[in-house]
Amino acid sequence: GAGVSQTPSNKVTEKGKYVELRCDPISGHTALYWYRQSLGQGPEFLIYFQGTGAADDSGLPNDRFFAVRPEGSVSTLKIQRTERGDSAVYLCASSSRGGRSYNEQFFGPGTRLTVL
Amino acid sequence: AQSVTQLGSHVSVSEGALVLLRCNYSSSVPPYLFWYVQYPNQGLQLLLKYTSAATLVKGINGFEAEFKKSETSFHLTKPSAHMSDAAEYFCAVSDSTGNQFYFGTGTSLTVIP
Image (cartoon, rainbow over all chains, first blue to last red; front, side, top):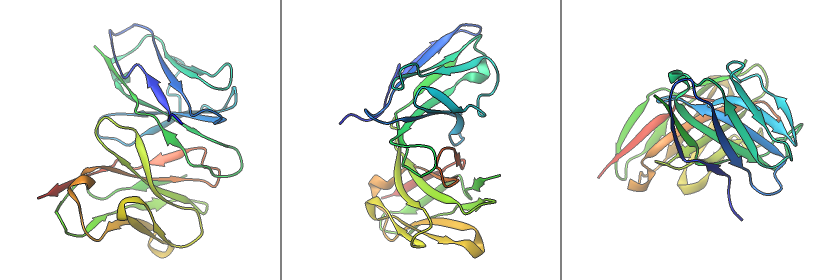
């Protein structure tokens, strides 16, 4: 089946604008994760969903960042009043089961966000 | 707190030579450890993982890694580099749930023909 997909692949916006980044996880995967990867750095955890609810949002840098997963499948990462420092690749991953036991995370190709 | 340190942001090897990418971890609990590879414009792909079973872990594409608790290390090796191994490699650590990964800063591997 298809892997994790993310749209758009590239997004260029201006400082102060609002953006939405979309993630389609692997079908049937209940757990979904967002990461941010800045240039020259490893991915940095943002938020983790188990089903529709955010089980851990401790990685969101501030209240400009918000993510939803209303039906337990597709997720949208929303960034308000974008700043140049938000420029990064935003990665999404999904796994078949989060919670108490380990399951491999499958990553999407990412969305490259550039804030001018 | 959990973290990983990857020594060497850039490693160059000749085709056919040994590949050694270093990773040291810090964890207050028994860790799960991973190596991921990232090819240009592609997502992260799992190479191998350590989840407290055998300390020598074999992965895809001929890579392997050995968990050494005494050295808090999980170095990635491959006996003979191939041109197709050129990529960015990330070491990561998580707790037993795998819900939150902590990635290293990555090592860019160049293979010289």
